[in-house]
Amino acid sequence: MSQALAIEIWIHGACAAGGYGGWSYVIRADNQWRGVAGGATRTDAETMALTGLAAALDAVKGEPRGAALRLHLSDPSLLEPADTNAALRAGVTKALAGWAAPPAILDSRRAANARAWSDFLSSWADFARDKAKARGAFSAPIPKLNIAKFAHDAI
Image 1 (cartoon, rainbow, N blue to C red):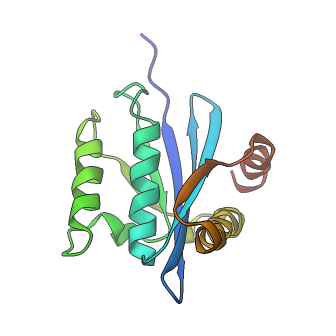
Image 2: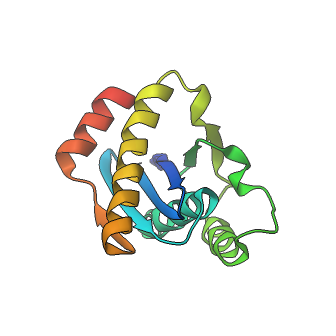
């Protein structure tokens, strides 16, 4: 019997003064890479990180539930209980409940590749934040060539 592969998700959220925020994620599942960035207005960094995580979990809902799930977060406390963002936290909790085992939560700030990871996802979250400031809330795929660079440099 073959063992399910791990699904890895890297998340980043950012916010600037004025309440414009952005988020980005990259997913590796079954050696396939994909990513999305998005932004919103009237928000904060925690909301953006949770929004990115919720979007990433939605993107992997069709993956085998027996696969190990690894979440690379710049702030592992993001998944701890809190009084803020109740609806987003409930959605994330519900999405995580469907997996065979709890996810491994990895602190990306301590990873050997932390700078490459942070630079790539920060750039996309910042881009999304700036685009949201100009055009309002949105999300869009990160181009495959950029994802390939991330996979080469950060992993």
